[in-house]
Image (cartoon, rainbow, N blue to C red):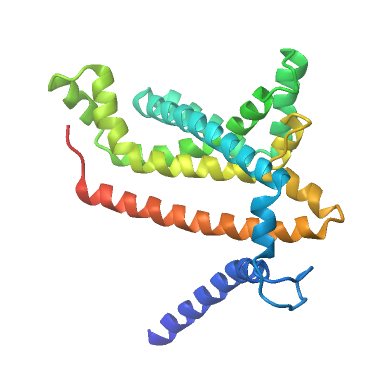
Length: 268
C-alpha cells in the first residue's frame, strides 16, 4: 500500500513538473537581461519597465482587459439564463439544449470565427471595423463554457426551492434572484472567470473578427514574435509572468469564496 502511494506521489510530481516548469522558467528569465531563453545574464526589471511604460503595450493590455470583461459579463449572463431555463424546462428541451451547447465546445475556433464573420459582416452587413463581430464571436466561444459551469451546480440544488420561495411570498423574480441565483453565485463566479480567461486567450476567433487597428494579447504576441524588436519580445515574458500570477490569485480567491459559500449556506 505504501509503495503504491509513493508511486502515485511520484507521478503527481512528474505531472506538475511537466506543467509548471516551463512557466516558472519563463518567469525566471523575465527578471533577467537575457535576449533569449538560455542566455544567462544579470537580474533586471528592464522587461517589466518596458511592459508598463511602452504606450503600445499598455494600450493593448487595457484593450484586452476591457474586451474580456465585457465578453465575460455578457457570456455569464447568457450562459446562466440558458442553464436556468434548461434546468427548469422540459426534459426533452433540456437534452436538446445540452446537445447544442456541446457543439461549440468541441467545434474548432476557426469555424466559429469564420461563421460569425460571414453571418454578421456578409449576411447582416455589419461593419467589420466595429467591435460587434469580435464581441459576438468571443461570446459564441465563452457562453457554452459558462453553461457547463452553472449546470452541475443547478443539478445539486433541490428543484423545489424555487416553488418553496413562491409559497413563502416571493414574486417569481425575487425567488429567482434570492434563491436560485444566490445559490449559484460560486458557479457564476467560476463561469465569469472562465469566460474572461478564454476571451483573453483566444486567437483564431479574434483574428477573423477584430477591427484592423485593434489587437489583443494573443494576436499582438503572435505578430510580435515574428518581428525583430527584442525588447518587445522580452517584455512579453514579463506579461506572461504577470498573467500567470493573476490567474493563480484568481483561482485561489474563487476557490476560497466557493468554500466559504458552501460552509455558510444561504438564507432568504
